[in-house]
Amino acid sequence: MIYILVYVDDILLTGNDDSTVSHLLTALHQRFNMRNLGPISHFLGMQVLHTPSGFHLSQSRYAAQILKKAGMENSKPISTPIASKTLCHPSSLLSTDTAALYTQLVGSLQYLTLTRPDIAYTVNRLCQYMHQPHEDHFRLLKRLLQYLQGTLSFGLPLVAANLHLRAYSDSDWAGDLVDRKSTTGYCAFLGSNLISWQVKKQKTVARSSTEAEYRALATAATDIIWLKRLLAEFQINSSTPTPLFCDNVSSIALANNPVFHARTKHIEIDFHFVRECIKNATLQVHHIHSTDQIADLFTKALSLQRFHFLRDKLTILDPMASLRGGDKQAHISRSATASTILN
Image (cartoon, rainbow, N blue to C red; front, side, top):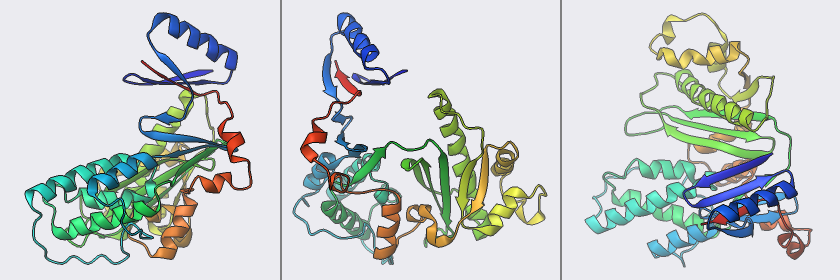
């Protein structure tokens, strides 16, 4: 099996047989003008550190560039990206130059969430004010940058594990104090590896927490279907339903109950395809206690203890945590089958 990932002129090549990979590299060199950069270390702005158990993905250099652009490379670190209680005070609009800087920084932070799901909720909040940022929003942005200052090297590990897919969905009902719309949070794991997550503000106002949670279930279900189809292309097939964990008993009952209740008729019909997914054994919705709901980190601002607890559950950590107890230099020099090729 050989897989080739192409993005413009960047190519990532990997496979399960070293001799076949080498033969393909030779053939590509004969036909195209390209360079073999050896075992992967950087790809599309992401740093790949080889660890004894696999890889560690981060964007520390990119995050440092964002801090430098904001003039906050020497700022004091903060332990959370957003305060647990964010009050909205009337504030004046930013000047044209500062508003342009705000837009540039928030746009850059969106790309940083590729390896930093712990900032996804705060970045989502900041993106909602891109069209007309106020001073309060800029202060929120600076707090997030201070959090990055103290967690520059944090990222996601990829380790050898089982290939069982599981997902978590959550919603913060009427969490937006301005328009009272809810926020959907979702994440999926393949074994112990976090592979997909999403923070999204719901388009309409939910009239109950059940409705908000059910919409989150529907969003998670669509992503699970896509992930299962993608994994099937990698010949990773599963005949068992994918477990989807939710902490709202009412929405679980609604998903499993074939009766269309009068009180749920205002929910768009397309959201009820969750029932079809359950019927077709694509997924199976399970209840999970709110304390253990990992997707909670994607829906609201949390206290310090709660935030760190869920960040650990998402496996977001400093690469040194993976290297403790081992010979760092020995494993960094270890060869890998993955190679990066640039034209």
